[in-house]
Length: 89
Image (tube, rainbow, N blue to C red; front, side, top):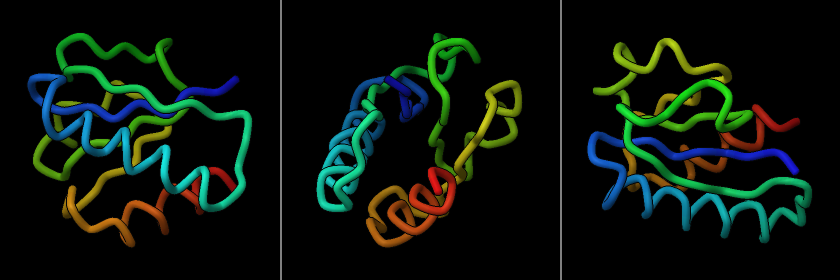
């Protein structure tokens, strides 16, 4: 099982919201073999996930994470869907 981790500054609010959106997108697209998780940027390490999702303002601090998806808007579900499906496929 591969992991997609949403990361935010505190690891609580926005990353949890993105995690739920990731789960919805995976389900709607019929994609299995992936699970979503969330964490704070300070606690996220490259070995914790296969793909990481962060907001643009955190991207410079998240360069140590592999397979990074940078979102301009955390609430734009279409942006997340397009970038996530492109990364998976």
